Image (tube, rainbow, N blue to C red; front, side):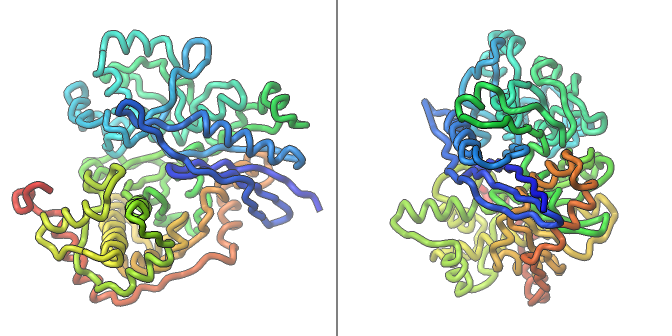
Length: 501
């Protein structure tokens, strides 16, 4: 029996891992090679990624595979962040974290240079201060003349492209990750010179765009000598954006489907042949991102499991140690529908005491204030499920399509409470899994690139047959419907009714 061995390197905002995929016949077996924490570092008030540590972990993962016939590897990461290279190819400094506060006010500043409607018409991206466009604008605004002159001599590489460069020495911009920047022309699928010029960004700052699933090259001879690798594996720029890897693994057989990629961020949407860029999609602030095979992911970004993850970190600081299962058990005992939050309220986006911020939000919006750990967790999970419904209705309103079910992929598929709440809130069956959708998608794209799978439809048939896929049927629909009306009023509240929120 012939076997193919590939490696998926999946770097998330809180952790990274390298996974081995062993492919034989119609099966893919996953095995963890290495896992590590991805810990940002604050220096002089700026929040950075520890890029050199991540390179070390990537090399150690390769070292662990030296006795295996590794055919290829592909790196996927979170979106928007980047590193700057000097003319000699050296890194000018650690990449700055998207949660750094340098982008505060940059959306409003951008609209003084480029008309908002025109900006959206070209890029089709959801306006979020963390986007690459606003990160670069913040750099330029800090010292415009000096910085712009400096940027003309540099190259910017988005995070997965930066890792590919370290591995192979080649500079390139992969399509899916480029589409997260708000600098890409969504229809032409290339860098938008008009947007860059309006914002003062040098048009040649980024390398040319390559399609998802492009062979970048082989691991360099220097790295092979350093790690004593017998053969230089092929490096594939699959989908550099982790969300697009996950979407490639959605176990859908129908052409039109609704997905929810649920991790630190929740991304809910559908897949289209072409972007939707209309007044309605702009008013809903829906984004168009590039996916595999030049497909468009028409989706909404929502703060996701970050709220639970950061709350858990706060409780640990207070000496309270919970597993995620224990948190769900506590939430299950709490009274339902006591209070809601808008997960995307700016106060919830930065690290810190999320439970206390939730209490403050509920106090300001004149709701019952959650006190216990279980009440906080239940408030988060119910609010997320309600926000998923809110966004799903906007997606359907723009596409004019009806979706019978929701495919929930990623880490959230491991949480039965969140899956069931989502089914209840939407009134739709939730198909949960695969939990390792990003890794499966990463591997499947490598196999398509190598000619071992015949396209994305055949790849999705692989995940549709996984035994872990579980269906959640809606329950307590009347109670959820009644409570959703309260939630919707909260989102659409007049600002003067709740001062300070």
